[in-house]
Amino acid sequence: MKNSNNPTAKDVAKMANVSTATVSRVFNRSPKVNEDTLKRVLKAAEELNYRPSRVAQRLRGKRKNSMIIGLIITDMENPFFSEIARGVEEIAYKNKNAVMVCNSNEDKEKEKFYLETVVDEQVSGVILVPTPYNFKLVKKIINNGCPVVFVDRKFSNNDIRVDSVTVNNKSGSFRAIERLIKLGHRRIAVIKGLKKLSTTEERFEGYKEALEAYGLPLEDELIFPSDSKEEGGRQSTKELLSLKQRPTAIFSTNNLMTLGCLEELNSRGIKIPEDIALIGFDDMPWSTSLNPPLTAVRQPGYELGISAADLLLKRISNPTRNASDIVLNPELIVRKSCGGYSKRKK
Image 1 (tube, one colour):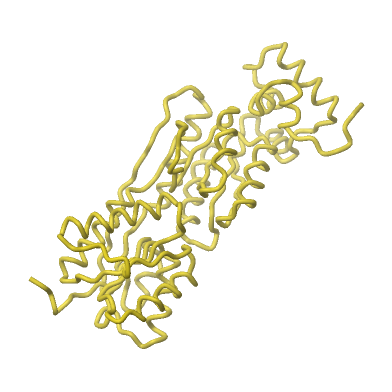
Image 2: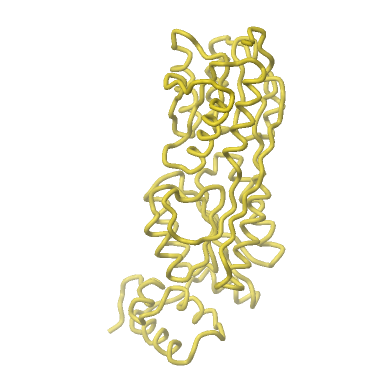
């Protein structure tokens, strides 16, 4: 009896006792599938009344060797992730492939939904900016044979070998704090991003290591956990400005929080850098248009996307190759917002 529900590739794989990747290969007419497996998959599909992804079929019907790449980013509002998407699309288009872009918005259920969707749509591979919430599902997808590349972040409890492209966040933060220290600052507040993210922890490690390298104490009252969003940056800035002894400098660990920080400082008439210095992590096109122009750690977002797409295509063509961990270096772009500091301690 045929199933009237909406069966997925996962249902077919379960019935045929194969991976979802094998189901995908069957319907993509891959020569790598043996006759016995082909028959089991087609029989399971018939019994379940399964129909493969219409999107994938239409694309591959036009171009025999075309693929669809799934790209799951965490915040479409953030220009940094748009740059990653631009890099991925550039490589995909050059190779006559298409990109399915999804936005998890740092939400566990949305990420789960999109991970399951791209698998059900039989994408050829997935480029993922992972949240901390769906490690088991991601691991299962990888173990089932779907090529996956992490970009920007990794899981802190990563016990699987997977291709990844990240930035040396620790080094970028260290250089930012070092710059402030050399300008004479001793009370440097840090606005941290969303907890449990590898990027948040790595940037905070760079902050701590710079303080330690220059003999400065780590002061709890100068550490402000936030949510990686603009409003979080604004709220953290309100809190740090309420300290009895205000910091002389602020290090904001992502671009959206930096915007919130700037809004709060400006709303109070606090001058940058005369009253308080500011450095952000993430350099954006609008950084030069601010008053004063923002000193920031520049991440190579476009290059991250290009490298991630390159790795994914290599993984698809050679599934058994050793996993690659590519780490790109950020750059500290010095402008006027960090200023100088006349009360430098010797």
